[in-house]
Length: 495
Image 1 (cartoon, rainbow, N blue to C red):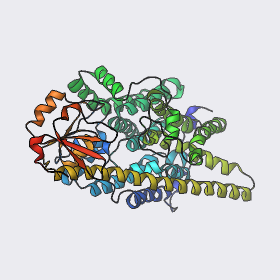
Image 2 (cartoon, one colour):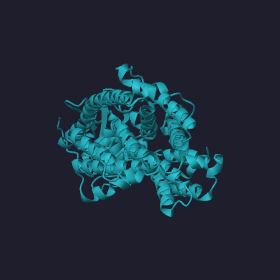
Image 3 (tube, helix red, strand yellow):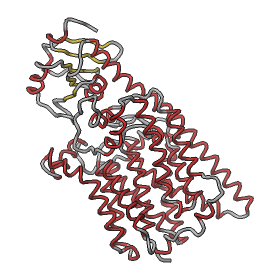
Image 4 (cartoon, one colour):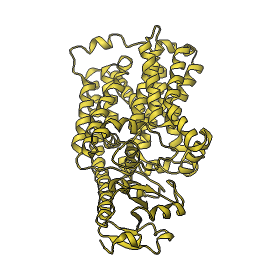
């Protein structure tokens, strides 16, 4: 059985969908509805979101944009911010866009897997709490995930004899999208696709390879240009990125990923204990299911549509399992999106392999019950994590309100603990003299403080910087923060 035969369209797959229930569209609609009902209401902006949005928000100064970041999500949100700065509107637009993108990404796979398996794969991915939580958020990881799903599907369809230019454009555009949203993830996605072009004899054709390489170059162009403008070159930016990430190198982060599977949203440093171990069983089973799916696919002769997404998922997991010393649940969204294709295919093959028909019904019922139980667990975790994210954003907003009561009005400057999100909420610029977001010297900050309203923030976990010893301290009640203002700017008021 050749690889070329393994990527033939499923005979009649398109025709059989006529007159049938549009399951994939229903999954996408349900995904959008879940975001609007469970996440969007009252959820404020998180730290990273304020950084991305501030880059294109005409109402706020741009926060420091560190070396590892990419600007794709800022570009996506720019049209909305050009019209309004309303957080609920941003949430609603992103929720709707992510639902459409989910449909479009998995729709690429329908000629390869058929409508049922494609819809099941989309449901498995859309049902994860982390997928629902980040759908309406201005964060890049979900968009990388959907771009990766589309890219692998287009790549397989590009291997068919006589594949159209539209397929190649879809392939290049998907790789470019992933790279624009997150440069490093785009590179890790393109690597196995380009390797497949060289390793698989049936795929040694220039057009797909050029589409992948061209997409990578197009998506990376802005990141590379910015590297030269701000850091002096790609190497210097990569070095700065490594320093920001805590030193890229061999770090086993699998334990961190496991412990933070159900939160916190950022585990850095990841010293949290594992809670609810039973709720992590699906994650521990995922690599076993993926390997089983690959073994079954190799035996049945349709290896390409299973092995390729598995290879891409493995590549995309490398930096988050082996190269950094911390973790966050959102990091693995591209991996989950691709492996959902394998799990859905394995489930369908398991049911079809059962004889007689009555036994098939029983197996399908058991698998459906497991899916319902899994989705129920994901819903429970989603409620907890959404409440935590809302509380964090509310705290930022409360501190910003306290600063306004102290007389801080734009143009103004906020520095110290969590200065970026709090500065965004207050409408102020943000600056830091230390840490991953260091973008100013102490002397330069003090010069700015002499000419514009400035506040230095400290919370219970971070002592005040030494340069504020002569400044007046104001406790912001109910927030755990203390604001330090130059005495000339404090006006003698206390919060």
